[in-house]
Length: 92
Image (cartoon, rainbow, N blue to C red; front, top):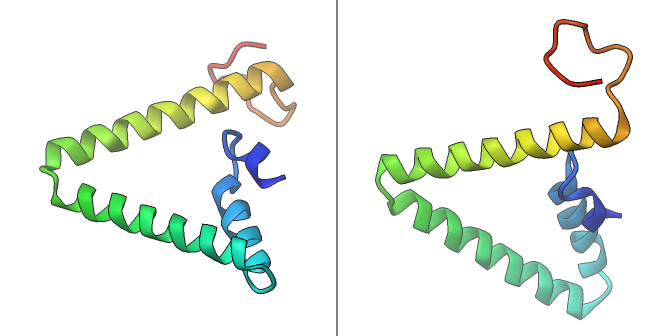
């Protein structure tokens, strides 16, 4: 379920890591995967922290654009909820 939720709006990665955390209490392979993921995330955040502000802003802008695109495509495929005000610029 968590892998499917990653590109969708919501807590996709949180679900994946929470599931890995629970599985790691019982299975060695899950503990290894969780440790690998932790090292990768730490490496990414360390690298990004060493970059100039321009690079960090660019990464933030690309991330925001990706999330916006996923939300728009999801709303297009599933339909705009009835509770969204009419002035919100989404196609119906």
